[in-house]
Amino acid sequence: MNWTLFFVFVVVLCLLPVVWPDPYVLSVMGSAGIMIIAAISLNLLLGYTGQLSLGHAAFFGIGAYTSALMSLGFSIDLGFGLTWQVDAKPVWIAFLTAIVVTGFFGWLVGKLAFKVRGAYFVVITISFAQVMRMISLNWTDLTEGPMGLISIPALTLWVPGEGIISLTSKAAIYWLVLAIGILAYLLVAMLVNSRQGRAMIALRENETLATSVGIPVTYYLALATIISAAIAGAAGGLYSHTVRIIDPDVFLFIYTVTMVIMVIAGGKGTLGGPVIGGLIFGLMPELLRGVVGPEVQWVIYGVTMIAILLFLPRGLVPAFYDFIAWLRKPGTEQPRKSKSSLVQGAKS
Image 1: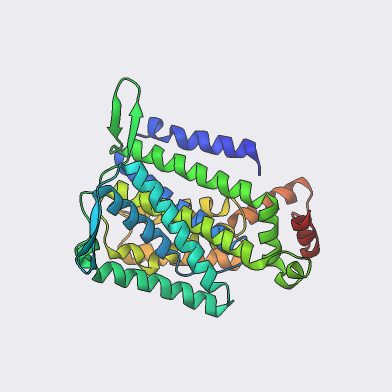
Image 2: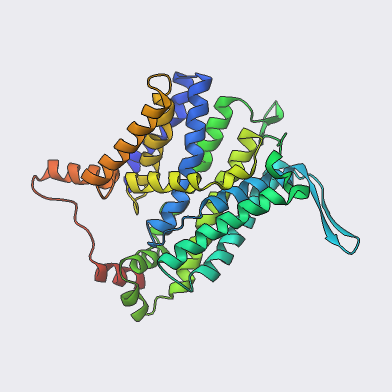
C-alpha cells in the first residue's frame, strides 16, 4: 500500500467540510461513505476469497436494525407468559452490539454456506437476505413492519468543555463516517497483508492447491465472512443513526448490487478499488441530478459501468497502477504473483 498517497487522500477528505461546507455536498458524501464502507466489507469476501455474496445487504440491514432496536429498547413476547425486555442502551453500546451480532450472523451463514460453492453459495446468500427482509416486514411487534423504526437517536461524542453532544450536523456526520471508513480500510489492509490474508488470496487463486499444502479452507472462509459481515453491520448501524429512520427496504437487493458495482468497477481484490468505485458510483447520481432527467441519469450510470467493464475489466485501480508502470517503463505492466507463489506466501 502506498502510505503517502493514502495520507494525502485522507487529509484532502478531512479538509472537505472546511473548504466546502455546503450541507448538501456533505450529506451526499456521507451517504456515499456509508456505502463505501459496505463495499469494503464485500471486497474482503469477493475480492480476496473469491466468494460472491449476493445477500450482503442482509448484514447491512441486520446492523441497522440491531443498532436501532438496542438504542430504542424493545420487548419480545417469548410465549408462556414470558417477555424479554431490553431497555434503551447508549448509542455506542448499541452500535458495537450491532457489529457483534452481524459478525455472529456472518459466522452462521459461513458455517452453512461454505459447505457448498459456486451457484449454491450465491443462492444461499440471496435467500438469507430475503428471509431477513420478510422477518423485518412481518415481525411488526418488534420492527413495526413496513412502518419502520423512527426517532432513532444520533450517535454522540464527548467534547471537552461541551460534554456529550449529538452528532447531527452534516459536517459531524461526514467526519464520523470518514473516521469509521478509515478504520474499516485499515482493518482490511492489515488483514490481507497478514498470513491470514495471504491464505485467503491463495484460496481464491487455487483452492485445490491451497488445500493440498494444509491451508484450512473452511476456517479462513468463515473468518473472512465474520469480519466482512461485522464491517457491513457497522455500515448499517451508521446508516440507522444518521438517517434516524429505517424500514425493511434496507434489505433490498439493490444495496447488494450497488456494493458489487463499486467493488468490480473500482477493482476487486485491491484496497483502493471499493473506495474509488464507491466515490464514482456513489456520487454520480447526485452529480447528474439537476443536469439531466432521471432516465438519462441511469443511462449514463449504466453506460459508464459497461464501459469500465469492457475496457478496464480488472477495474480502475489496477488500470491506474498499470498506467503508472507503463509510464516508468513503456511496454510493461505491473507484475502479478503466480498462484504457486501466493500459496507459498500463505504458508510462510
